[in-house]
Length: 175
Length: 175
DNA sequence: AGATATTGTATAGTCCGCTATGTAAAGAAT
DNA sequence: ATTCTTTACATAGCGGACTATACAATATCT
Image (tube, rainbow over all chains, first blue to last red; front, side, top):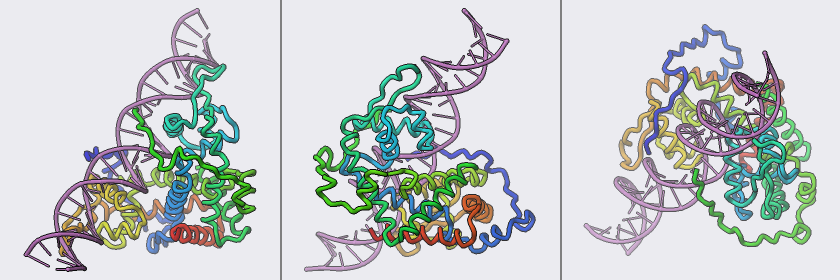
């Protein structure tokens, strides 16, 4: 495993952050002392995402799809024949990520790329019969994972949790 | 890009899930009709995790580290000289993931693997001076991302959001 | 019309998650 | 003591996120 050296932009420029000198906020200063991974939103979000991802992987493996294909499938089940550009915007992933995901989906017989009727650059993404056939099973699988994860939540708590996440997403998207 | 064919375990075994016949819960049935990605916990969790990841990447790039190294660094800043096994258990990642992350950290001059004093199989992971030097800056960076993401949350809402995530993690870990 | 800018896709390369597998050391069983 | 099992770590290979880059088709500008 040859591992080429990484190339960070500003390293090894000396970082001379003097905590006291830069007068960080009380919250930041306190976090310096008491930083706790089990109370860090970022840490928890990463952990929870991995758990969801793996739970979904197990649920949908029998359907012949993988978690990364799910968002694209959802969008295409909703409306077939979208361009890659439209999918990229809806799913908020990079264009290269979408292209690679579509490569795997095409390989797995879930989609076909057809020529766009008017725009010679664009491709239209069309679901195959196989992809259409697993729609309901996939919905059930995804809902099952959500239900499992939120077992023990009251309907109000579920609603609140969802709202919190939507708020954070909106906030981070602005940045 | 040669993309080898994927090999799902039970495909193309016919999936004969009859929604009505299997009597899914009301919630599940309803989700079949109204599945909305913007209200799916799994969908939101994935999205939020990507946004956190990228926000943290930008924050810590000047320090010469990447987000995946953060959990290991946190654990080692807390207690230097742990074995890979201990890190794997604390961070809840697979052993192979940890080994690869440690490879990159060693390459980047953040850690050294030393022989364990009593167990010939184990390695002790020790931070370098470089890794110790960026500790405070890294804490500030991570806290800054958390603060940014949770801007607009009251202290009570923050607390509740954290609690929700901890609950979901515990639930999914049991499964 | 011709030159330039923008847009839609594709690809190469990296990070970081996973599974599957290999290997050497330690521990257990006989 | 030898054999077998378990444990700690490494590696190969894939999925899926990213950036950077290339390229062709469209749109725009003069």
